[in-house]
Length: 381
Image (cartoon, rainbow, N blue to C red; front, side, top):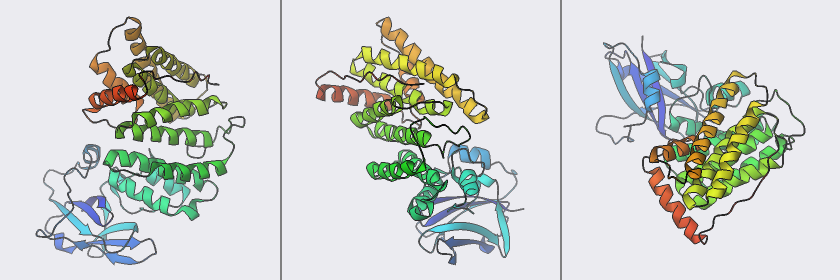
């Protein structure tokens, strides 16, 4: 039985790995549906034709979870050029018989989700049918963002914000730049329409993608991550401190709010420490621990949110370890520094991240006159 693993290498090419293909490559057909409903056949690129670079296209996680197959099965890899602009669906056929994906997470059938159920399962982080490949996730996010008018209503607004946030993270992961101010403005306009973000009115049944406070914190955290990895220390710290300032003006009555707050406070502590302001570093470490305690004071019945308390706990542990070194007037070992940054940020960090960030922080500190101060913001829990 033939099965496939699929992903998009870019806007106009699909990479397909067919399992148990035997000698049927010539009869395998890719069918793509454009956003306006036009059905076209993909063009299989031959050996002599120039193809997108496919090494590393499939992430290690993708291959590990989806690539298990019969050792004797023949596997063929194909690259199809897609005819058209943007696509809502891609399917694979052997003659007229559909070839199904090896796993629901390798499917290309829903590339333009518009129903809430499809957005939750096929696109949102943790969705059981979400394609593992980063480029494919990025493509879907762009489809949603381009469909602004459709998403400017009811529950769809939160998923539009979610798409913008995911695209920010994909820009980090895939190494391209975006106009992040434009993304923020798009999101804030929608968040303001979703509902009260003061925290005075709490609906515990709302998902994280429908809760205006959660969306706002997630957006600011994405901005912090973007600038941190891009090496703009000033803007990353502006975002990290703004998250905490914004949260201090609201009643935080759900544990999910503290996920990004713990990370922002720990990141701030690390930057202050490297910049030489250990008083503020300790202050931020203490705040990280307080955020953790606050997150555990709210009863959690959602198993995933309960599990995510481990991330809050990790931030608190890293903070306490950093405080211990500072109070002993000892320099933390490089392993602790890297673990703290890895814990405080939500993306995979390059191997030279600590070295480069340390250099950039010291340069930034010098530009600020050698004194990096910070606001004393009291949070409400």
